[in-house]
Image (cartoon, rainbow, N blue to C red; front, side, top):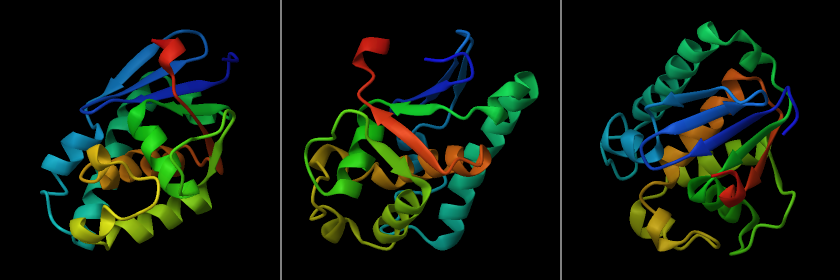
Length: 165
């Protein structure tokens, strides 16, 4: 990773942000935390719930930006982990995410708008969406979009991240 880059590892209950110079920060807002909290396991969640989930990601990211302001200027950002891959799979509608895949903000917004209004029974039929992510995918969308919006990113790379752990 270049010195101005960020790695955003999305785990079930946390998001770890690692800067290019090796500093690490943890947000306590992984997709399952959002699913169990602000999204209240609603099927589908109400617009206010989605706004609250996005706001929670923003708030925790703001806390980190106060401590490390250079994070807000990062241009090279990669989202890693199974949740990030799940969103990429839904966006491309396939089981395999190609190396070097980049998710545009417009595409991330479109995936979010599509999935956020679908009840669980319909959501599970989206191409590329594995059964293990059917319930957490809306929380994943909130995490990725929250990061993209707060950092004003037009795109975010998506990678497995296995080699980074």
